[in-house]
Image (cartoon, rainbow over all chains, first blue to last red; front, side, top):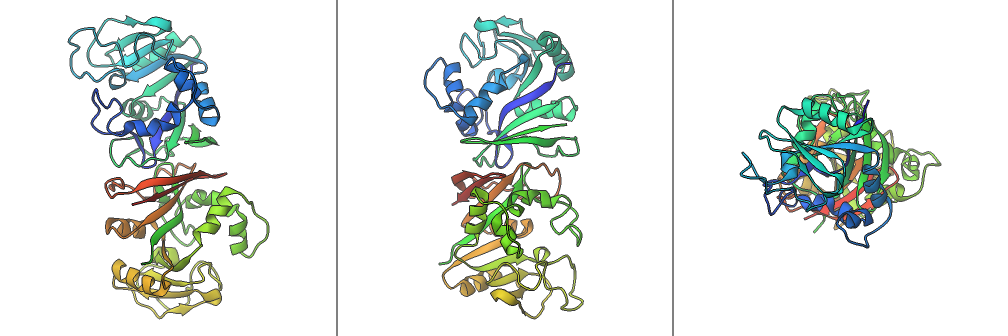
Length: 213
Length: 213
């Protein structure tokens, strides 16, 4: 059975996985980008942007590994784009340009149906309107034995956590105080859910903690 | 003017600074001791316990430095002991034996007065019943230009934060999920309070983040 995991997911010191007031200008919410400083300097990230350079080291290795053995992704609609409500047309094709960094089937949770969207590099976006369990079933089928990665955002991860459907999470704690935004843990007792850390790796710019049931 | 700081204060991944259900058996609350794994292995901690051995390295250096230039401490009553309500007698002299690790005046916040208590090694406990601002005034006088260290617990730190009286905090994020206990940040926006990280040091067993206004 496919393992279901969250990987390389950035969390602030005060527990936020995104800033507040997400929009086109702030796709990660206000100051949300600060959570990802540890990623954006890596060679892997630069490569994903079609650039050269970037730093090697622990953070870079862990970003790279987060893509290993992933057979399908699940994203919340807000990770796909800033549009709310019904799709006006099919012109929005994600934040990532013509060749998104997924290279697998990607299941986007939304209340509004839309035709699937095939991009360069093997990424196809499917829009799922009948809930998180359905999306996971479809993703597991598409992953063909590889892992299903829940990409986020916070709300989607919390829904899958609450449903008991996540096996493992690699959280990257970034030395940032957001103060407000989308909280990953609030009202959730991950210890009671059965999660415990099994590996901790100190990166150059984040503390990486791997937890599982 | 004396700087007021919190130092080497352990916080779980989910933001707790102590476990729930503190009592004589669990002075740090249930599972609270897990927060301090990074400390208890250090040479400095062993030395404070009158033992030899222990690990050197980043964590050890930062525990040691947390005692530098401290002229007075402030503690909440629960850090001094498990007794609640009026003192029955003066037999409880703290968790630390005859020679506590403070070696300065220590101001203990409590609702119940008690005669001051001089211990070996230069530690004197003073019991302050007229509030956090009074305790801080006394501590600053006693510190004679050195720093005042707020030792905790969580409730005391939160009271001083809310009053805007803390200048700097060194928080040690430990790879532990407590799930419940005393939350350091809940309902507080440290970013709005003006705090921001200015130094991050990856230790062997904790991520050390220094924040200040």
